Every structure is written in structure tokens, then in C-alpha cells.
Image (cartoon, rainbow, N blue to C red; front, side, top):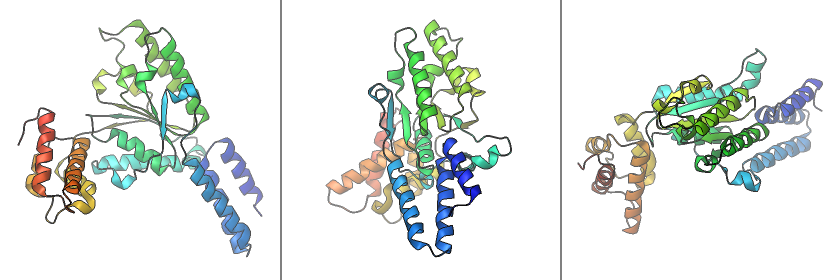
Length: 321
């Protein structure tokens, strides 16, 4: 039977909407019952936890209006797949650790990092980071469709933002505001209009007042365009860069997997891939794998991958090597 302290903790974690803490306590109760020889009830408790975990991985059934504003998916990207500098991995890991241990922080009057700003060139791992956070925390990934949020009608965008933040408060998930500069641009820019200033002010107000248990991630390719007032509203700001040579090598190994040929990747291949983003390298690998499969081969030839990478560089006007 659960102790009084465990029952209190269960109730508290329920009202805090801390699913991770709730499951931990339930499993502690199961272990306690198993120690006392009550194997049947212990097994039934564990089965309930497993069933709840399966159900929590399902896409959130939003209403029709929210379905047009938010894309809810389940991420399968693990932390080990994230190819970024070690100091960046440490910071992402810190976000995960604080989220999982938020009860311990709350007892000491502190809160975990929940509002994260990611900036850097396209394809350098910002969206991937949001997906990793969702997967590792066993939460849905809810991507805010910015093209559906921003409208030409006065007041409508702010009203939609309010609805989004009400959902953030009601439904625990990882919420990704991709291409965030669409609403976060500097208020003093010459091409700014009064409506967008009101939208930005609304966002600043909503994110400052947010006290939910969700994780809010904003990603931008153009941090220089963002209003400086935004940076103070985020708990952490992570800046992404194009991959260096060691990261390019790891990307190639991860993406090619069983299709990699002996001796790959060579120094020449890594050099050719230099100046491409993580996403561009991944797509070049995928193109080479598809070509290999269609030619009834089992390993990607390095010359083929060199060709695919060169095509990518040409497409982005970086010159063919």
C-alpha cells in the first residue's frame, strides 16, 4: 500500500501536471509492493504505466481551429543523433536535466529552463534540437504554423497567439515557434507596421506571463532582426553554426549507416562537404542512398556521394568542387 507521503506526492505531481514525477512515484509503489511479495499488483501497476506511456505518445487531438495553427507530431530523434559542438550538447542536456528534476528546483524556489531561443543559419540543427527535446522528455512536438498565425486582419494574429498560449498552458508539450522572426522583428525597423508591433507586444506579454509546465522553443535564422526585448524573456539562448570537420564526419557516418563503404568518409569527402549545413549534408547522403538502392547496390560509392554533395553546393551558389 502506498505511504501517506507517496499519496501526497502523487496528488501534488498531478496538480503540477508533472507526468515524469507522477510516473516515478507510481513505479516506486510498484517496487515496494513487489518487495512485499505482491507480484500481481506490482505487475498490474507497471502495465498501467506502460499503457499510459504508449497513449501519451499519440498526437494531440486539437479542435478544428487549433489544427490549422499547430502541427502535433511524435518525435523519434534521440539525443545521440544531435550533431553539434560538445558545449552545445552540454547546454541541451542541461535543459533536459532541469526539466526532469524541476521538483527539486521548485523546493528551493527555482525554476527550470522552459523558454529557449535557438538562432543560427538554416539547417544547422535548431528544429532537430526541438525534436530531440520532445523525444527525450516523452512529450509531443507541437510546431506553430507561423504562416497561419500571421494574417492581414487587425487584431486577428494577437487573438491567435492568445489561443496558442492558452493551449501551452492547458496541454503539456514542446512548442516550437519556427521562423520566429516573422513576429519577433525589431519594433523600430523602417518596414515595420503598427499591427506587427502590436503582435510583438502581445507575444512579449504572453511569454512573460506564461507559467505553464510546457517547453517553449523559438527558432530564428536571423537573430539580428529580433527585437532586443525578446532576449530577456527567454531562459536560455543557443547559437548554432555550420558543422566543423569532426561534426561533418559524424554526420556522414550517422546518415549513411549500413550503406557506408569501407574507408569512408575520406578527408577529401569531408573537405568537399565543408560550408554545407547539417541538413544539406543529410540530404546529399539520402540522395546517394536512394541512387545506390535503385542501382541494386548495398554500399554507397564515395564518388557518388561526392557528386551529390557537389550538386548541393552548386544549388546553393557556393560553387562546384
